[in-house]
Length: 337
Length: 239
Image (cartoon, rainbow over all chains, first blue to last red; front, side, top):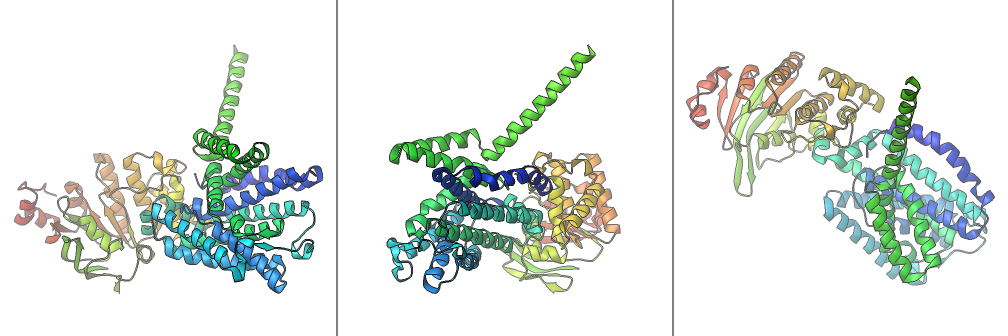
């Protein structure tokens, strides 16, 4: 959980650039809609977990209400397009601004709460937004949902094929990771980690705790809403159960925790593990057995990697490194003998 | 510089501090002593803003602090250490200190230089990359001082930083306090190490059961019959 932004930047350039090039090329090689679709879903959840991690991981405020922001993004972009013909590109921005303001307001109210009380407050907030989405039928059409017209065109972020959404998803993930890296290198990033470690000490050093948490909450909410707008234009149909449902909040938090809470790349890695696991199990077993197996496998993952997938990777890497060093020393001593 | 006027703190009917008044002049070193549970740390907390007094005022540099939170007060120049140390355990020693420098408004690179200069001053440079959680208690106490110094304070409140230190470490700490004081830093120090505080303080305040029962030069305090009675009748070590 160390805060080593300079080091992380170097690693992200070394690993990130070739990886990014490979990711950009994926649709050229993968044309199967199932696999490309799975990839897009992974990208979306990776972006969501990364966005969640800004408030949930860096600021340490475990939120179980992020589906609310996801829903705000999805509904804002969809409704602005359906009612006023505003392109979802702008709808996405509007949703981000709206969710950011909501995140700041909710943040200002709930972030004074500590520990489990904060978690409960975010949970209640998420449920309130879900109930609103179900019952405010004049606006959302409730459980009937909203359909975006097929073939709205590239200008309206509504593509006929799947490949464009791969690139949009990639952009979304790059945005959330970029914002995370920028925060970690800024005073705000240091303040957030400091207040997560010890709030009283941070305060005594002059850190404006509430202001920092509100900022983190607003940024996290705005990015989550971007993913919501992306989801709406990708699936082209939204309803409360696919956007504001409690399970979505849990899934976002779960992925970030499995991947490595508080780290820059852990939450995205978590999506790479958790999402395909869930999807493949569902596709091969279906229904109940799949869910049970999914739950069991998550328990195994958390037991095997208590510091997240990224913690496990780091441990493996350092083991390999020290192993290589040992072998090199042995070779040298043999040479001398 | 610091004026505490009639400060009273009630915890659910228990009066922890009872109408305490005192002042700390700029450039001074003031000691605050008293038996366990006398209310020393509580009094500290009213100065730093962690506790709001039920009555009384705290003024710093002529300004009433009532409406200011701990962060505001830190930015005005009041820094503190915690008796029960509170390191940012998951951060390196350098980053712990860096946070203090950032709140002065320094950019990250500049704050890193301030942090490194502060660590050098406290002979902790070799520990800069260590995780704060890995430090033994004596070094965690020194880290508390480093972090507080990095905020660029005018008044430094030290809460028992010498407890658990060996005589050499105590002497090093006294030397550091004297040097910082010579540069203009004002000190208010809670200390159980009577020998140490009597050496360094110009004025000593004695707190017992929430009341200030004596105030004066160390030599006079050690002869004060009331103070001697509070310390179980044992004569205090002469300074």
